[in-house]
Image 1 (spheres, rainbow, N blue to C red):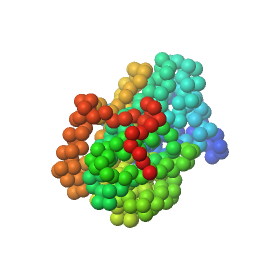
Image 2 (cartoon, one colour):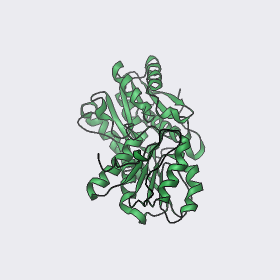
Image 3 (cartoon, one colour):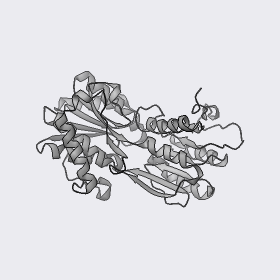
Image 4 (tube, rainbow, N blue to C red):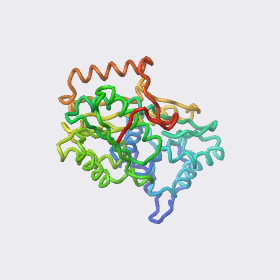
Length: 335
């Protein structure tokens, strides 16, 4: 069993609630995954990778837990705080409401929420400029497409995921003004993050409409998108973690969202985590695109040069990528 597996699985009951064991104080930081599990090959797994990197480098240990449903959030967070874990890192915006309630109760504990914003003196909120990274993979999608139609499949239909979609569409149009961008969301509940069967169905629907490159920003649901695209002989684009290795030669690239860095930095800072808002975009290497041995043959030198030029232009402010969450709109029409 690894250091991270010294997890709180032994503290989990088989019933609806969480059953916690020993009451001795934890000296370790803690990581609580969002629904979908730490091995979702995407968002949660990126968080897990950051924790593992910290543990490997420092020799330290940490506590962790995977939730089974939303009802477990408050109990898990409260128990970690009561037992002295510090800092406590939460992966996912869905932690915002419970953290707003509990952070004032545990003022001596430092909390870090990834993808959510909670204004409290002991909370660090880490968000990403996903639209910037999505712009780059949108460019690659349009340049790789032979049909002139590319697709986007999101997870839960929320403004955060629309930010991915809009940035992707803007990048695609920048590379090919005549491109058609298809867009579907998987659902409106947290189940949308872990439904690879539905992801596959949406992928087949977009392929039938002509899409030959499809970007999945859907957590575990995206695994079904990538598999179905591979089976159909079209390209896919992964998200959050580098998913190029899942289907070498079929995954065009992955939009990297450095959740691992956010977790690693929080664990490294320990009780000295600085509260406030942390925003990670291209300038901070918080987002980007993956290029490795699994997709190098798919990205021509011209494609790479165009995307790298756009990256520098975005950082310099010469290209403004619209942030959907600023006003709930997107300058590019998607179908």
